[in-house]
Image (cartoon, rainbow over all chains, first blue to last red; front, side, top):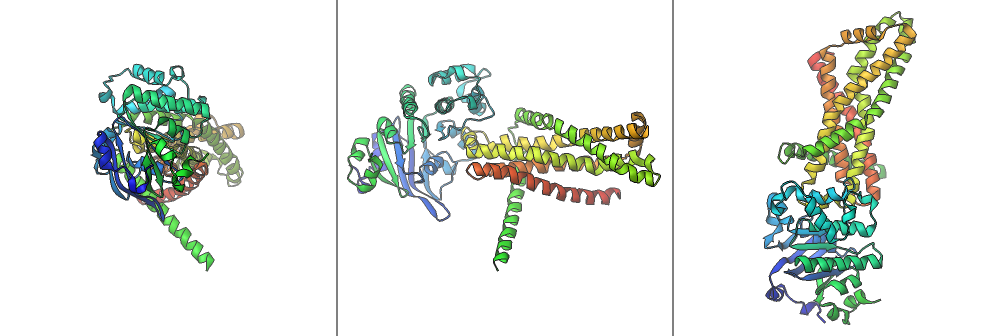
Length: 260
Length: 260
């Protein structure tokens, strides 16, 4: 069991492999609401890291700091060796093509077909993908990866919640990212569909060797997919370890996450 | 005391809103000439806003022309001035009624539509998804819509004027035995550049105002579905109010140049 004073430090983690994401002393407040109070985290190359926390604990804020959607009050955020807050817009956009982001509600563009949804991220990154004009093979491959090649010409409104999540995952994969950030990937889905999504995440990780940061409050999701976990409590990384270590904890704040 | 405090808060909120709107407009002018340009989306928006407003503008314009002529006719007959009907109706429609009514109709249809669409995109994180994919959502969503309304409104006003004049000519033809050709000859003889130029210029400003307010309200819509409704509603109210302010300024400036 790893409790706050025994948290694996970034330095120790970095020794296990190359860090693709490093967060040091991250602070973020909204008015009087102090969401993040010095959060630290390191995601290693090829690793599946789960960050768990209660609703409103700042998980989504933290993950949005990683792609520059939210500006932190202080602290450093490094992704693939680049400090996000110091990048100009062009470099940030380039870096974003290496980061996949699966949004909580899928965030598919309502006014576009599934095909157009997948083509959209490619507009600015055709050189990286080596695409001249025909994007069809890439779109088909991405949809086949999630088992939805037949939905190419459907509108998002015609898809079920699980299908939307899978299309969103396909859209995330289309730029062949090195890191994928999952914001509550199973929220709002039934248990069977949740399992399918988790399986899909694992198969994608195996196939492409991506590093994954998964934000969730779904214990089952964390148990299946995590190699390492961080519990975010009161804006800090309260505890860190494997699922087995943390689930055996007698610390009331840690135990609260795993109580059935 | 309570009323004073509420009024003060209201006034403060009003000035904050005007400041934010001005900043939003300034950002539009900063980014409108910077590449990349979203021509395809601009064309799509022009089609959406122009084509889909045609029926509404046709019905409204026709009824306005019809009613204006029917209402004015008895009074003009009383003064023996019914032969001046085409001049009066033509000038009033081209100078003022046509642009203002068309703009108000479009404020109701377009500004609310943009407010609701962008508000919904904000709430469902589609705007965030766009940003993460390396596309500037301000350029793709806001600039294209403001440009489309600015370009399409003068065309709709011109079309609405013609339909209104046709409605008026129909009444004169049925009630006063004036042929369509004669009616339009008199109207075009009565109109001068000092009627057409200011009306056309102010139509561009009306279009800009409608697009700007709709986008501003939608883009900064607060989280939640209630926020979408508020964005759509306040977009119409604010756009309609600002149209009258713009109209007043336009008439004031026209008076200086053309001595109306």
